[in-house]
Image 1 (tube, rainbow, N blue to C red):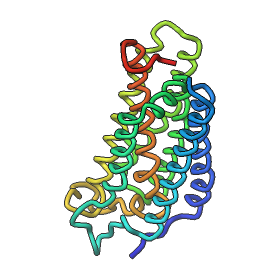
Image 2: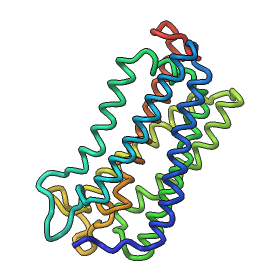
Image 3: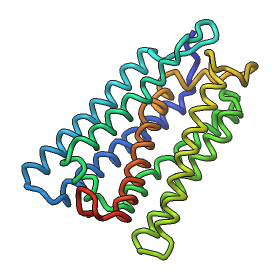
Length: 252
């Protein structure tokens, strides 16, 4: 049986998802405007990336709303199919960055502080705390995931400001923020699996995590989380290139 989703979750998602899409598309076109290439190359690269991003969001929404990833107590999945929705986009993004010089140029042209500030949307993880207070999500998942997300989103603004001002220690702060943000996501994924119906279900048997595989919250692990991991990966990639300028491209 599909769990009941509170109306306020749909209202919040109708605000957060367009915001996340606007941020991601804005980064793409900001990079296109600054990348060292011909106008044709800039617009082609940014156009393809925009179509892929929009297509990914549409596919994730279709699969989520069709209950493709739904896990229930009555029908726990033998294989956590939601991992495919998480890992496939990450693999495609990594291969694209590795194989496409145009994409690498575009990413290199995005100001680093904007790549960091983009994750301000992580404060939306505060909705998990509301759902926990409402008795709809287990604390074992909510406390690390919700608090960690809100902290990462707030810290993103602070770290981005340090980078924009070229403050002393800004890069060290960025490394620390990035590692914290990634650790938060890894813990959230782990606790999500351990509190949801399935073979990894080891916690919260009295009040299992039923909402995270139901639409619209399933968009978090199949879209928002992989996007956040991509952004963290791009930030670490940029930091590494700035400390090793002998790479394939000159850092923008």
